[in-house]
Amino acid sequence: QVQLVESGGDSVQAGGSLRLSCVASGYTVYSYCVGWFRQAPGKEREEVATLERDGRTSYGDSVKGRFTISKDNAKNTLYLQMNSLKPEDTDMYYCAASDRWAWCVPGISFVGGYWGQGTQVTVSS
Image (tube, rainbow, N blue to C red):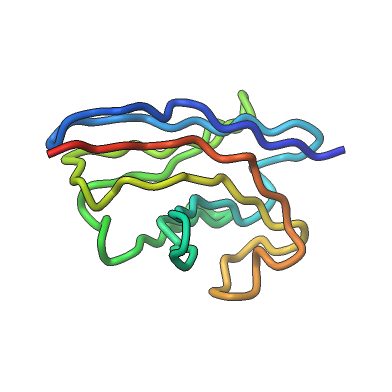
């Protein structure tokens, strides 16, 4: 059974930093497309960052230059380093993993995949 468990969410002031972690069990983060999404109540889910099997990354326009996605294959853990945080980054952040795609294809790779329970990030001005 695949399980993704996020941690690291917190309340910080604008300009601060956080690092989110997502530990995977029953799944190998090395093998597939993995990523981070965020969503607030009543809002559409937004793709924050993705990481392909070969290490290629992609970022949403709103986080480019501030967030960095990475993984530790030995620890089977996905990370999201978030710097220069803004109040508009306030959201629930979810870790996601494809069940079959090594590449991250928008709108496709995470369909039918695995999701964590989310970790809350709150940024105050």
